[in-house]
Amino acid sequence: MKIGVFHSSMTSAVKELVLDVLSEEGFEYDHAKDFDLDKIEDYYLQNRGIFYTGVVDNTIVGTSAVRRMDDRTCEIKRIYVRKDFRRRGFGSALFIQALKFAEENYSTVVLKTDARLKDAINIYRRNGFSVIKEENGIMYFEKTSLKVRL
Image (spheres, rainbow, N blue to C red):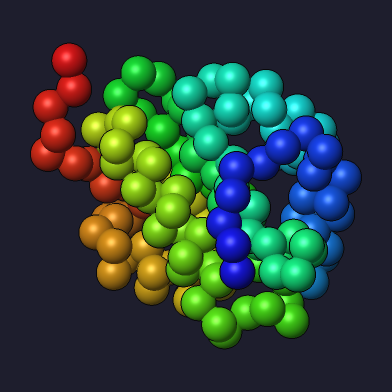
């Protein structure tokens, strides 16, 4: 898998991938939560964030993203891998790429996930994230770096 930065020509393929993965996991498209898929460049790239795609044989098989929340804090989002490409380390690689970007540019990284997604939770904990709250089946994580940001 080759990890690269999103380009606007990928919009429909990325949206299709994300919505397919959500559907496989029992989640439906929610315009209030998923509006960013139509404005990836604006929402991520032009706002001091990043959106990565994982590509195998010219097909997007995974994604990860970092969204700026404020000058010190960002959120890792959109970690998805197509079902037939799971269990190969692609999700971990996409997560680590997003985490590196986050740690290089922010002092606090947050993320959230459904409490049923045990593999994701294990990856977050192994990489230094702590649970800061859990409500309505959603787990909220945080990692604060020791970097001093001026």
